[in-house]
Image 1 (tube, one colour):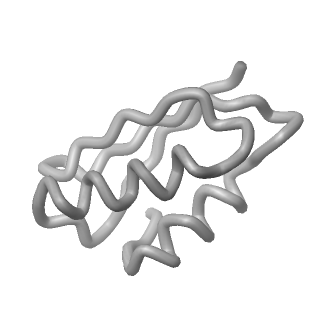
Image 2 (cartoon, rainbow, N blue to C red; image 1 turned 90 degrees about the horizontal axis):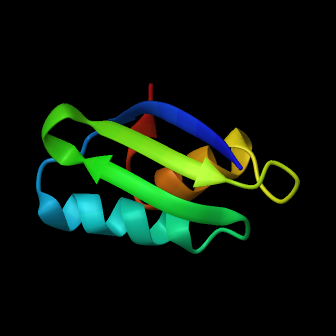
Length: 68
């Protein structure tokens, strides 16, 4: 398993946090997701043979947020 951390732009509440977390957890290969809307931080543990940053960015953007 690999881990990646990055900034999610646009989250303002716990509902935003849940939407992003659920979108990321729905991606094949994602084992765990830690999100903190107050500091716009996301950390994902995933199988690099099944998923990658491109999948994460697309899932986040589909929820209406951005990645920095």
